[in-house]
Image 1 (cartoon, rainbow, N blue to C red):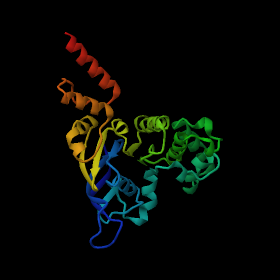
Image 2 (image 1 turned 60 degrees about the vertical axis):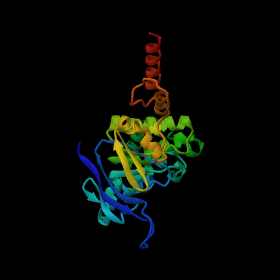
Image 3 (image 1 turned 90 degrees about the vertical axis):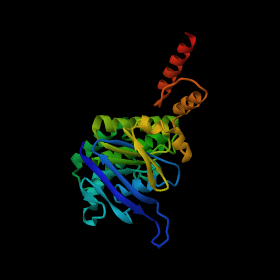
Length: 283
């Protein structure tokens, strides 16, 4: 895999005073092209601050971030960085600017100076990618929360970024809306090869990623594949972090003496492990 984003010893403070608290505190991380990374942690841990650094919305106080070899501190290449990395915010209403879905998706392309014929093609492709093509002439106000978020994602896709950073995109959605958005995100990564950085506090969403990054106090505590990270239940609980519900159930049952495997993340895996355990008890 080709290295795409490199974060080198990044510190960031919202204040310029000498004794100010750092929201990011010595963060180091590498993200390869095509990766699907989930960044988790409780409120105030620095994950959203990190997200806004990846397309130069924020600039490190000290340290450096490179996007495809470009330092995000390079003002002359800011436009280039933001073409490579798109940012989707928590509230889709903050990103929807037009009264018709297809016009909203076209907005970013128009700002890039793309020719109308190509914009038409990009908008149609982006809406199909998020399964919203049939709603192209609808008003965004008539859409559900999940549909609005998919339109916001389509607006980023139309600009053809190599990476999409999503800052808690499902936080304001109901379970169906969350499922719609997560299905879209997974599709963009697996079928279109877009690098995904998902900021979330839903551990069930994090298990779908290739790699999980756990943050606390502006630092990276732990990184690894989902089974590796969520098998460290005690460690995560010490830092006031949750684990997927299936993992929690297996953890508690093991504490009661049941012989169950580690690395259980999904409801299906949990049900299968419990069935095997019950059948073994009957023998």
